[in-house]
Length: 559
Ligand code: DON
Image (cartoon, rainbow, N blue to C red; front, side):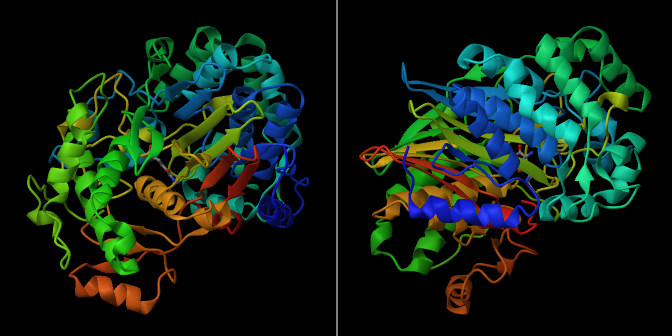
């Protein structure tokens, strides 16, 4: 594998900011972009010792569970989009959490019919049954070449020896210190004697190391059955949570066909339900495909992109949920004809108020995840977005297991029309039911054209899909793919409700903002920049692989 000056630059930047962390392996050695240099290094180590992209994905995911515990981990879940070069297989490994059997709709609503937000955000009631331990085992066994124990070894080392807190760790631990202090096991794992970690504080997780070692020696099932599972269920239950042993025993990874479509000739392979990612991307891109985007001014292009997002996110809210529980009109939502009919109401000159869309809902006004991308020398690919949902998930560590639980119950609709953590509204289709998977926005994606293949994704809650959409538009529009530019590009976002364009602070010039306001859009700057996009590009002509990490991920931005 060769590299470009670009990827060398990116990895140099990574090396500089990683401070006391070991120097990251360069892109010369592997095509991995992840949110942490130590996780990238773990993946490179596996590729360099005969593993394939799937083996590397398991190693990267496990390492991220240790060094970026506020984003993802074995107490969480996620999705891995895989491409196997030998037989051209594309598959979506769904390791999304499931609601435990005690999680009824009524549990998350108080006597006055109001949503109990705290119950879905903090402590053991917020946690779905984790999917990541099952996924690590599944991907290693079905697609990898090396034993699980080999793949988990770097993560175990990192958990035992510790790693220095970087800027993101510092800001994550400060933002959730109060919740973490509410659970002694969480405080012990992630804080410095009850205080937020300072830069360079060494985070050591011996209990998590022990649990990872159990997975390495006994396989993923050891998490879901027998002694360990009993301990998980009992500890969660006695702390007021909703888990039963049977919920763990019944957990299954599901393989689903990815959603495939084209945009201006580029083949897009995207996330199917229970992620809304693919369907929202498809509708937005189909709407934009019928517009001559190249002929428009920069602000008119943004206007159309926003109007496309508005409509596609509305359908997310109206129709989408776990396809194993509710019937979603997928064929219609993924069709060009339907998208064109939705796009027909776009006014070139004026914003369409969300309340004026057909079937509009009303709503009242209302962190963390990780993505990595891998391409190996054989052309196998992995785009994986994994999450515990909010920063440090529920903030609840299960006894002495070192396992930090997610707060993915909050991705359900507690009360139709009432927004969640990401201000998303939804309908009956995404209400809570035991065994159901909460609707996600995670959007691991492949984009392929004559030039090559882009493997891309990002954390960022509801804004994940608009970021990936803008990434695809950028990729298709640029004569030469420029990964550094793609991951660093300024971002705007519209999600139907709240009815406003959210922009990154300082990212767009005043005339841009004024031009959109003149069309009737409300434009508001968010509190901080968002996203942590990780992209890898395989150039079909030269065989070169470039990797690029979002510069935002190096500056303490949480998502
Ligand atoms: O599945 C989802 O859509 C969310 N739980 C993702 C959360 C996320 O990206 C947090 N971000 N940094």
